[in-house]
Image 1: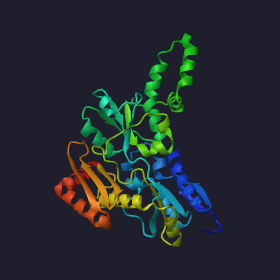
Image 2 (image 1 turned 60 degrees about the horizontal axis):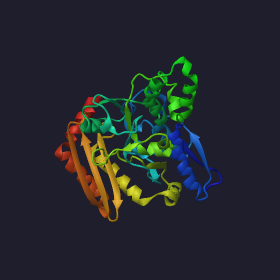
Image 3 (image 1 turned 135 degrees about the horizontal axis):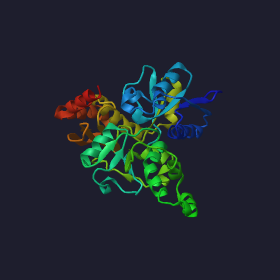
Image 4 (image 1 turned 45 degrees about the vertical axis):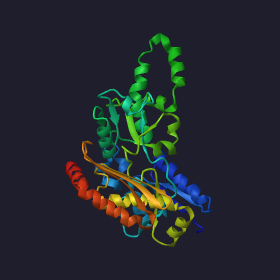
Length: 347
């Protein structure tokens, strides 16, 4: 493209870097020279605060995109679900290159799903949507917030479990303890050194995150059914943002995947029309199937006691208009009131 390498901005987390490396590899396969540039964001600086209190969906993207618009970076790579539905002037999603597992997954030390947990068991999540969906399906569980990168959250989950086992060894059992420690996964050994305020029995998080950093090989994730736990709009997809122009169009032609872009566009159009951002419990998932876009939407109240749901097959030739019409139908059925109540709860 140019004599200079394409500068790709990424957050410093393992997951963010892995996503950026995926884009870098895809561009490299087209002969493009690239350079990864790590950038710290507001979300990285305030790990103790929940996402919805960090500037809503812009918490992890603004620092990167500002540098793209200023010309310090050529490309920013994000999780699509973190991208605001309204982009700054001059910025475009140049490519949607791939999508990993879109579903949420349950991770527990026993490898079992939520239905196997005892009443009152504590489940960790940083998402208002996941919290509402968990409580709707399992009102006898306790849901507590958990922050941090994927590996950090998993260490918090396993900390109480491995420390309880470690406490069973006597001073005379050093050989057995050493053998036990050597049998632990890298994740479980890291959890031995982590102090936590809450003993979690399970976590609910994105399956795509586990896949991309290959932690699904150390845990036994149980996928949540999309029918009752609809993922966030864009979950599992990667967004490549750039300044609008010829360079963005060239990147688009190289690595954009049209069926994934259409599906994600339907999800984001619905989210924008509903007006929920990340402050309301909204799940939206779309899949292109031939000439239709199979679409599922779930809007809940914050405690999961009420839900407005719909499943539609939208015609691909007018997917934008059909998505907007579906959002209007849901709003009239009560979704507008649930979203307004969720926004009021956050004030």
